[in-house]
Amino acid sequence: MRLNFFWTQFLSTRLIVNLATLGPIGRVKNAPGTVGSIVGLLLYAVLFQAAGPIEFLLLISILSYLAMAVCDAAESRLQMRDPSMIVLDECIAMPLVFLGMQGSAGLVAKHGGWPVLLAGFILFRIFDILKPFGIARLQNFPGGIGCVVDDLAAALAACCCLHLVLNFI
Image (cartoon, rainbow, N blue to C red; front, side, top):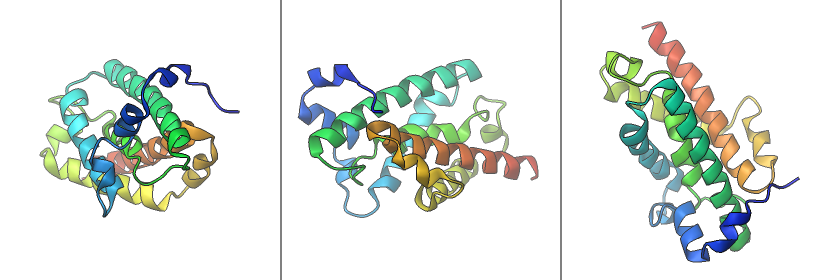
């Protein structure tokens, strides 16, 4: 069953593809997913870092829905299944790595900021590339859902690992 993101039909193909690829980011020749994840770190710093738990979950939910819709439309219009040029999924999933760590008293700040961000980034890329624990099977969901949900799962796995590491340091 494929969800119908009907509202995307009113957006131009150019806009849909540029949103899904984050403009020129998805067209980087080497490791576009890694570059998209770096943009996701910036997204975390700008929108999520100071958010409370409810705001964090609400924002990630809204952005995930929008990413699924845009990625679904982009796959359809490009006639490609989860091409590497679509990096919106990595960008949207990246902040989820730091769930429960935000705020001035959070684990990111407590452990010096950038080392935690770097560790989260590395863990996310490992889980996103290797797709262990059944994460790879999530790509089998149709359209934009499959495109985004595997990255969200990779981010949650990285989040769990990062929490474990930080709580035992």
